[in-house]
Image 1 (cartoon, rainbow, N blue to C red):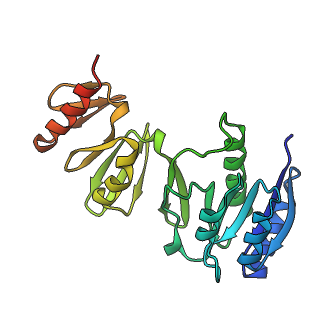
Image 2 (image 1 turned 135 degrees about the vertical axis):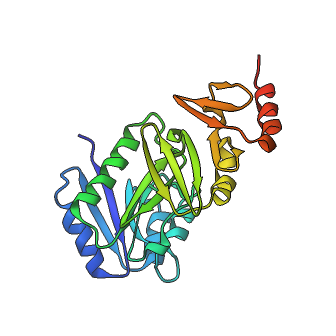
Image 3 (image 1 turned 180 degrees about the vertical axis):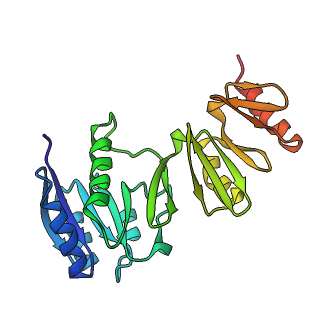
Length: 233
């Protein structure tokens, strides 16, 4: 069993107590230190203390949890916590392990720890795969970009399809397209965005991704043809 060191950063002592209480049930997680001051926590990490995983609140005075993640230069992974759903982490740049909405249950924290351990078991321990969070009710689900088969626009929602499953995000296709274009996703129809590397066939009218046929709009065909021509033998 591999052991991990953790810290908790939150300006609410009761919030720290909840996480600390849950962590006592993990024999391989050592709580090294807690902080109610994010500047103090930043300086602690900056001094080179080895921490595997840090729990940090987002809405912190002076240095927010998001700023703390961006300023961190070592290999510490972060799990974000907050009382406010509007602060949901929906950014690829942060690449945090998970996002927890208070009050945090033991079951939900267990899922976050499991995700962290799965990442640590991966071949590359220094980087996390591009991902984002989708909020459904009070739950935040982490979606790995590589797992997405396609995204369908449904008015103000986007249906993100992963194999036989899907989730709904309160986002327009335009806003998602702006982010995913970096990862070789392309709008091929007014209602569809697809990952270009997953296209297995194109017949002039639709593309095939796994078992799904996705229509290609007439105004998007030239851009798609250009990509396919640039990647042909």
